[in-house]
Image (cartoon, rainbow, N blue to C red; front, side):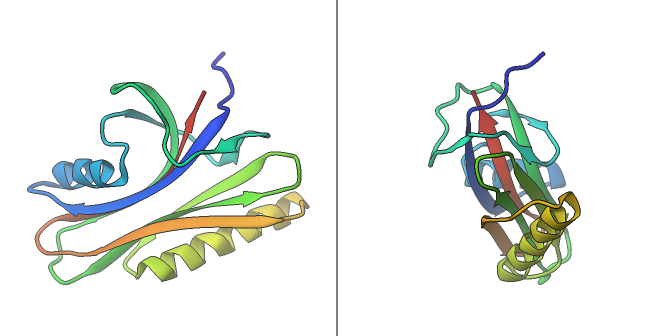
Length: 152
Protein backbone atom coordinates (compact mmCIF):
# COMPACT_ATOMS: atom_id res chain seq x y z
CA UNK A 1 0.00 0.00 0.00
CA UNK A 2 1.24 3.48 -0.84
CA UNK A 3 1.56 6.05 1.94
CA UNK A 4 -1.03 8.81 2.18
CA UNK A 5 0.27 12.15 0.84
CA UNK A 6 0.86 14.87 3.43
CA UNK A 7 1.46 17.89 1.15
CA UNK A 8 0.02 19.35 -2.02
CA UNK A 9 0.58 22.19 -4.43
CA UNK A 10 -1.69 23.65 -7.11
CA UNK A 11 -0.01 24.48 -10.42
CA UNK A 12 -0.98 25.58 -13.91
CA UNK A 13 0.82 26.34 -17.15
CA UNK A 14 0.29 26.58 -20.89
CA UNK A 15 2.66 26.32 -23.83
CA UNK A 16 3.13 25.66 -27.51
CA UNK A 17 5.06 22.69 -28.88
CA UNK A 18 6.14 21.18 -32.18
CA UNK A 19 3.86 18.17 -31.55
CA UNK A 20 0.93 17.40 -29.25
CA UNK A 21 3.24 15.57 -26.83
CA UNK A 22 5.79 18.40 -26.90
CA UNK A 23 3.02 20.92 -26.18
CA UNK A 24 1.90 18.82 -23.19
CA UNK A 25 5.49 18.44 -21.95
CA UNK A 26 6.12 22.18 -22.34
CA UNK A 27 2.93 22.99 -20.41
CA UNK A 28 4.12 20.69 -17.60
CA UNK A 29 7.44 22.54 -17.58
CA UNK A 30 5.62 25.89 -17.52
CA UNK A 31 3.61 24.71 -14.51
CA UNK A 32 6.75 23.68 -12.62
CA UNK A 33 6.22 19.89 -12.57
CA UNK A 34 7.68 18.93 -15.93
CA UNK A 35 10.51 16.79 -14.58
CA UNK A 36 8.27 14.45 -12.58
CA UNK A 37 6.49 11.24 -13.54
CA UNK A 38 2.83 11.99 -12.96
CA UNK A 39 0.59 9.23 -11.64
CA UNK A 40 -2.93 10.37 -12.44
CA UNK A 41 -5.21 10.05 -9.44
CA UNK A 42 -8.88 10.75 -8.92
CA UNK A 43 -10.43 13.39 -6.80
CA UNK A 44 -9.77 13.14 -3.06
CA UNK A 45 -7.40 15.37 -1.08
CA UNK A 46 -6.33 13.46 2.04
CA UNK A 47 -7.33 14.83 5.45
CA UNK A 48 -4.75 17.17 6.98
CA UNK A 49 -2.86 17.62 3.71
CA UNK A 50 -0.76 20.81 3.92
CA UNK A 51 -0.68 23.30 1.05
CA UNK A 52 2.83 24.33 0.03
CA UNK A 53 3.95 26.73 -2.68
CA UNK A 54 6.48 24.30 -4.12
CA UNK A 55 7.04 20.59 -3.61
CA UNK A 56 10.70 19.64 -3.22
CA UNK A 57 10.65 16.43 -5.24
CA UNK A 58 13.59 14.72 -6.95
CA UNK A 59 13.32 14.62 -10.77
CA UNK A 60 11.72 11.43 -12.05
CA UNK A 61 9.73 10.80 -8.87
CA UNK A 62 6.38 9.04 -9.22
CA UNK A 63 4.04 11.85 -8.19
CA UNK A 64 0.31 11.40 -7.48
CA UNK A 65 -1.40 14.15 -9.47
CA UNK A 66 -4.99 15.12 -10.28
CA UNK A 67 -4.93 17.14 -13.49
CA UNK A 68 -6.85 18.54 -16.40
CA UNK A 69 -5.37 19.32 -19.79
CA UNK A 70 -6.38 20.16 -23.32
CA UNK A 71 -4.38 20.20 -26.53
CA UNK A 72 -5.41 21.93 -29.74
CA UNK A 73 -3.95 22.43 -33.19
CA UNK A 74 -6.58 24.98 -34.27
CA UNK A 75 -4.88 28.36 -34.76
CA UNK A 76 -6.63 31.21 -32.96
CA UNK A 77 -8.61 28.89 -30.64
CA UNK A 78 -8.49 29.78 -26.94
CA UNK A 79 -8.15 26.76 -24.66
CA UNK A 80 -8.02 26.50 -20.89
CA UNK A 81 -7.61 24.00 -18.08
CA UNK A 82 -8.34 24.39 -14.37
CA UNK A 83 -8.40 22.46 -11.13
CA UNK A 84 -10.25 23.26 -7.91
CA UNK A 85 -10.11 21.86 -4.43
CA UNK A 86 -13.08 21.97 -2.11
CA UNK A 87 -12.16 21.98 1.57
CA UNK A 88 -14.28 20.76 4.46
CA UNK A 89 -13.70 21.33 8.14
CA UNK A 90 -11.05 18.93 9.47
CA UNK A 91 -11.70 16.20 6.91
CA UNK A 92 -10.82 15.21 3.37
CA UNK A 93 -11.18 17.55 0.40
CA UNK A 94 -12.44 17.00 -3.13
CA UNK A 95 -10.45 17.85 -6.27
CA UNK A 96 -12.08 18.49 -9.63
CA UNK A 97 -10.50 19.06 -13.05
CA UNK A 98 -11.85 20.77 -16.15
CA UNK A 99 -10.60 21.71 -19.62
CA UNK A 100 -12.26 23.21 -22.67
CA UNK A 101 -12.39 25.84 -25.38
CA UNK A 102 -12.88 28.79 -23.05
CA UNK A 103 -11.03 31.37 -20.96
CA UNK A 104 -9.10 30.64 -17.78
CA UNK A 105 -11.80 32.46 -15.80
CA UNK A 106 -14.56 30.35 -17.37
CA UNK A 107 -12.63 27.14 -16.65
CA UNK A 108 -12.04 28.16 -13.03
CA UNK A 109 -15.72 29.03 -12.57
CA UNK A 110 -16.84 25.70 -14.06
CA UNK A 111 -14.48 23.62 -11.95
CA UNK A 112 -15.60 25.51 -8.81
CA UNK A 113 -19.22 24.60 -9.68
CA UNK A 114 -18.12 21.00 -10.04
CA UNK A 115 -16.62 21.08 -6.53
CA UNK A 116 -19.88 22.49 -5.14
CA UNK A 117 -21.79 19.63 -6.80
CA UNK A 118 -19.34 17.05 -5.42
CA UNK A 119 -19.91 18.32 -1.88
CA UNK A 120 -23.66 18.47 -2.38
CA UNK A 121 -23.94 14.84 -3.49
CA UNK A 122 -21.75 13.79 -0.56
CA UNK A 123 -23.94 15.72 1.88
CA UNK A 124 -20.88 17.58 3.16
CA UNK A 125 -20.33 21.21 4.13
CA UNK A 126 -18.01 23.13 1.80
CA UNK A 127 -15.97 25.76 3.65
CA UNK A 128 -13.54 26.95 0.95
CA UNK A 129 -12.73 26.52 -2.73
CA UNK A 130 -9.28 27.01 -4.23
CA UNK A 131 -9.14 27.15 -8.05
CA UNK A 132 -6.27 27.67 -10.47
CA UNK A 133 -6.15 27.56 -14.24
CA UNK A 134 -4.23 28.42 -17.37
CA UNK A 135 -5.17 29.49 -20.89
CA UNK A 136 -3.50 29.94 -24.22
CA UNK A 137 -4.49 31.05 -27.69
CA UNK A 138 -3.24 28.42 -30.13
CA UNK A 139 -0.61 29.41 -32.66
CA UNK A 140 0.22 25.96 -34.10
CA UNK A 141 -0.08 23.33 -31.36
CA UNK A 142 -0.77 24.28 -27.75
CA UNK A 143 -1.64 22.76 -24.40
CA UNK A 144 -3.28 24.22 -21.29
CA UNK A 145 -2.66 22.29 -18.06
CA UNK A 146 -3.63 22.58 -14.40
CA UNK A 147 -2.93 20.16 -11.55
CA UNK A 148 -2.93 19.32 -7.88
CA UNK A 149 0.32 17.48 -7.18
CA UNK A 150 0.51 15.47 -3.97
CA UNK A 151 3.60 14.44 -2.01
CA UNK A 152 4.71 12.68 1.14
